[in-house]
Amino acid sequence: MDDIPATTFLVAGRPSAVSAVTDGLKIVVPSKPFLNTLLKWDDVLGANNSQNPTTVTVHTLGKASNGKRYANIVALVATKNDGQQEVERWVQIITFFADPTRAKATVLPCVKLFQKVAALFAHANIHVTKVLTERAAHAMELATAIDHTQYDALVIVGGDGVIYEGGPINPPSCVLQSNTFIVVQGLMQRPDWADVIQIPLAILPAGGGNGLAKSLTESSGEVYSFENCAYLAIKGQPQPLDLATLRTFVHAPLLDL
Image (cartoon, rainbow, N blue to C red; front, side, top):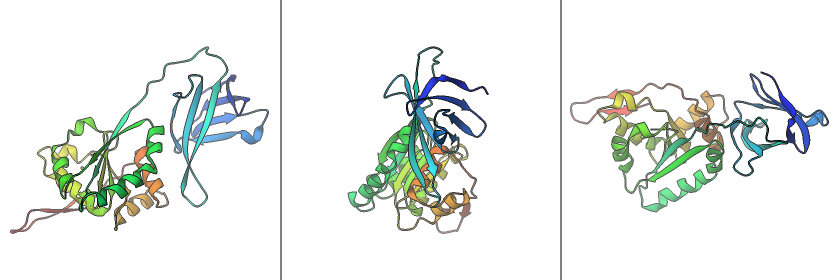
C-alpha cells in the first residue's frame, strides 16, 4: 500500500508521510525522525474527525512495559481538502446490566467503575446502552427477553456470579451484576438459545470474585486489569469456552463455564 503524500498530513506541525501497512499505521516525519512511529492495529481503538473536519484523531490503547495499557491520541492534520473520501462509521452497541442485590448499593460502584473506561468505548465508535437491573435475578429475566439481533456483544460489569445469572454483545453488551453466571442461565432458557449463546460475552471485573475475567484476560496474552479487560471487549477477541450442564431429578439444570 502506497504512502499518503507527505503534504497531506501534519503531525506535531511537521509534514508527514502516513501509510497503512500490514502491522499498523506508519507515520514518518522526515524533519523530526524521533516522531516516527508505528501505531499497531492491535492498539488502535478507532479514529474520528468530530472535533475538526480537517483533523483525524487516532485513539490508541498501547501496552506499557508492565503489560498494562494506556490511552493515547495522535492528531493527523490535513493540509488541504483535495482527495478527501467519505468514511463509513461502524457503530457498535453495548448493553450493560447492573444487578443490585441490595438496592443501589451494588449498582453504583459498577457504574463508577465503567466510567473509568467509558471514553475508550466512545473512541472506538461503540455506542453503549446501559441497562441497570432493579432486583435480584432481573438480569436473568432480561437475558431471556432481549432482542439479541440488535446487539453485537454483551458486556457484564460484575463478578463471576453475574455471568451465570443471564446476557449478549451486538456491539458488545454489558451486564452489571455481582453474579456473571446468572446471565448465561437466562440465555440458555430461551427457545433460540443455540443462536443467542453464540453472541460474544465480555466481563469487566467488579465483583468479589473475578476469576473468570482474570483467566480470560491472561489467556489472551494481557495482564489482568480493569482497563485491559475493557480493551479486550472493545477489540473483540472472543475465545470459545465449554459450557457444562448438571441435571438432577430434583433441581432445575445448572450451568457452569
